[in-house]
Image 1 (spheres, helix red, strand yellow):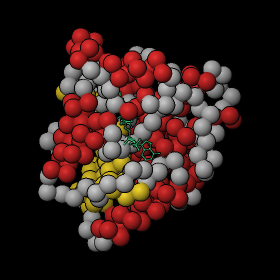
Image 2 (cartoon, protein in one colour):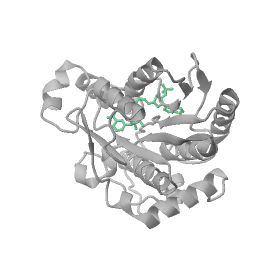
Image 3 (cartoon, protein in one colour):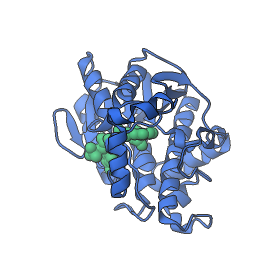
Image 4 (cartoon, protein in one colour):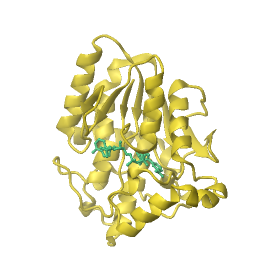
Length: 287
Ligand SMILES: NC(=O)c1ccc[n+]([C@@H]2O[C@H](COP(=O)([O-])OP(=O)(O)OC[C@H]3O[C@@H](n4cnc5c(N)ncnc54)[C@H](OP(=O)(O)O)[C@@H]3O)[C@@H](O)[C@H]2O)c1
């Protein structure tokens, strides 16, 4: 198994369980550790290096599960990667897209790919974040060219995040169309993880406190709020196929349910354009 985002938050919970099975788990991460290979998704050359290291390590052994869970949220859309792309989009979508492309032919025939998305990509969840206006890879990579971009930095940052997660769902669907078993995992809202670490101090504190038992009453009355343990175990369940709720698996009240993603996420043409444009941005063929 190969995984990103297994060093922190609910991904770390999932990684512990995945390691407990018979399969070997190769983690891509910025911090060193056992069976951890260097990976910075904000740098496409690092993604290529990680994919090459995985292939060398595995030899002819096919990958039976690819878990693309890493992600970040930023307070604005001003960050740029070494490749010149907006950071949130680059880490959450483009880096993962390239990794996927580089490992696609190393997947076992019956492999599963799980990509962590967010319910915030869908206006129907009525999350507090700005919802995506589009999934145009060029505009997301270069938001300064997006005429509809919100001038308020925090709102532009929210759009970068929710749109990147829309891209995740579209990528999962594009994979399914190519005959790969792929699931977009929507963990609901999981307070207490490291996800708020780049946000303003009050938000970081609120995020942390809500992840403690103090946040329990709020979690209890909201279908979308889950604990770190619930989200990590649900992710592991999907990988082990203990639960198979379909192409969009959402965690609600601590249980996995199959849902429809947003309208935009179901647009075939939008998905095709995203695949093609992402390929161009990372220097791969459209396939
Ligand atoms: N928490 C929520 O409410 C929520 C809701 C919906 C979706 N999600 C998604 O769930 C996933 C896990 O989030 P979390 O809440 O558990 O947050 P988290 O604790 O911050 O975990 C994020 C993971 O992504 C890794 N990562 C971030 N930037 C990276 C980069 N440039 N290169 C390689 N790895 C990188 C982190 O590695 P480091 O340890 O090196 O930082 C960490 O392992 C994310 O995709 C997030 O968008 C979370």
